[in-house]
Length: 270
Image 1 (cartoon, helix red, strand yellow):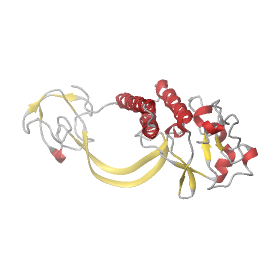
Image 2 (spheres, rainbow, N blue to C red):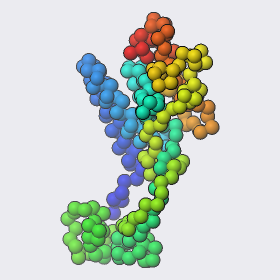
Image 3 (cartoon, rainbow, N blue to C red):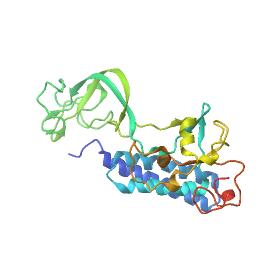
Image 4 (cartoon, rainbow, N blue to C red):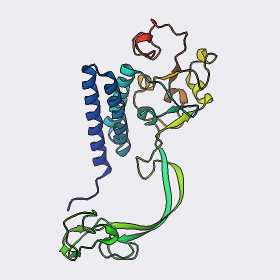
């Protein structure tokens, strides 16, 4: 019997394909001169690409492709930090991909065996093992044969090669903790704010005197200098998050500081 729950590697492949599809559509609209729709689709593609990387970090292609798409988005549309309640905020899936910090929910609950309906910790059945002559029931409004709410299995009928799983009931939430590598790989931080100290550590010293926190536009060039390699929390903030201020004094005809090779007016000044 096929596993009714997709593995993380299967979910990762699906997410990767979704991201590639969105990016292809975005490039298609770019050819049609519809820059607004192209930008939205290309940026939207980064989220499922990050999901693929989080679900199966062993596949290096997911991480590298996420950064490759990020570089294209940067070069095509530019990347400016947004604001959240007066603070600079990072929500870019590429920049956030270097952290696996997420949320873990603490709770108490009961696990009921899908085969016999008894407490999973007390019955003889083993989760994930297949059993024959299993009587179909609809405990907790879910079929114990296929784990679906709607199906063709007949209550009371017997079925063979049925995989045992558990129903979780009587859930009582106790707490939420911030942890490294949460049980659900997708339960990670989706946005974070940057303090003035954070940004000053990422900006060139020559721009410190010009920078006004909360009003100076800040361009992100992470994808231009990051090779996509895994980084650790001990890495310096500057190497992880290279961000530069686009001050009014920047020469519009000078090479852009992000390293794209384009003139400033045709790159991050947009």
